[in-house]
Length: 440
Image (tube, rainbow, N blue to C red):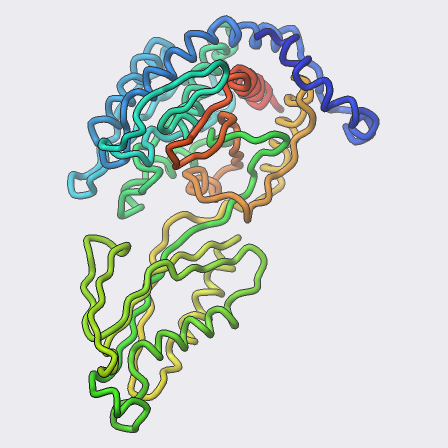
């Protein structure tokens, strides 16, 4: 597919917005391709079939998060390619007790220019025994495990850098690539599993993440994500005594009180959500291997002595998270008679907040999108995007996401990739990098 074809693909959608767009573009916007950028686009096109062949190869390697050898095998495939580009590479191992494969790390320094961190992940949600295992192509549509989330995004990073190398434009500044091996189920503690990623973010002038792309939007803000666990207790007794001074309300009523007040008193702020995902209550509770499995035993004529809930909390900022937690603690402490309750919180992904520098990068990406005939880019509503690894570096450096592949049905056996947009996404990434690395 040539750059002319790319422009033709989007010409119809551009026609209706031409007048509005012309008025909206500031005078300094670069909404055409330079000769150097046309050469970059041609280099991407020349490597297109090799890119798809490589994507097929790594998609056919199962790399479910707990398939440690599979994750490492995908890492080895990228290792060979990045070494051929002149990158220094290493594998970041995790402690054995974390049961995680580790991360792929590649770096390239050429001069004293800007430094960029490029982020992806090697793992998928599909375990080794999943029936969904193979790359299957039907014209420009591909189905495969993790093909969109996010092996095609990783491949975009590689082949965008290949195009810059082929055209002599990689030798400006420093490039750092980190593909994590546990994005779909992060290893704990985060202080270990995300240590190298965070340090790389702190050392970079900006960061780009290559989770799935979408028409007309990119991500400069994401909600954060954390977990909470609530346990209530009551006095085990015959149900004929429930509500009495001697017995009280029991653990299930106490749990009901707390959740009802959470719904009415914590809910409401823009972008703040909390979900009690697993609940069990009765005489005895048996916890499974993880928080997802709870087994309860009780009788209708026995007052419940224990109830547990495990849930998630999503938030727009650290301040919003702390306000919600403070209110939840206050509600938990106001017990019904004869009961007790405790709540604990576990941090996971921090919030990625929109800011001036993120917005500026979005503008550069929008100019590139227009230059490729695809129309302007706006910010994806942060409350509609899930957590991602870019959130760990966003507090430390300007960051943007949503530069990856086009497709859908991620995390399901129907996951698919639109191959007709893969060359476009790679071209856009390469030219975006070219421009950002040369900005004053």
